[in-house]
Image (tube, rainbow, N blue to C red; front, side, top):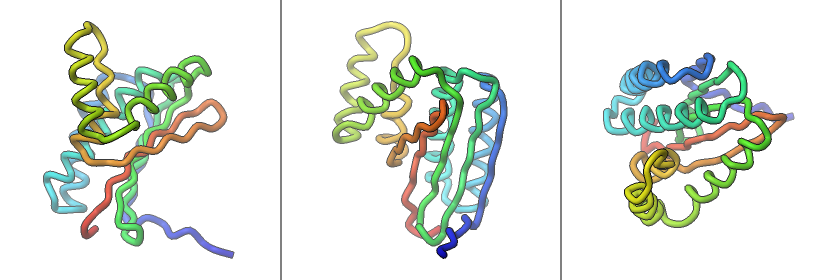
Length: 160
């Protein structure tokens, strides 16, 4: 029987999908990682990802519950930031399409293409996931189970 190793540092926040919480959580995440990693640039990248994922969660959430789970795994040498929320089936299909577009191809090329598209249109830019890949340097993973969507931003760490 194998036992999955527990992350050395772990935080979980759970709250209703409200725009007003996002900046507060971003500041908390940056502070948490400044203490845990002593790398200001990486802490800012992780907090940027948290902010962008929370914005998506608020936008696509179908219930009054959104959760943010952050873990640092020393054995794997990575930080896995995960934001989960309940989602309606039609919204899930929209989000899956957005996720596929944002994660296709080279991060820089995708980012520049999305920036050009955003400049031509008014309204939503849909740059969040692309920013996480390009500006924050994270890999993205999508999980969907039982009416919930979870997006992981995974950061490789030099020395955790």
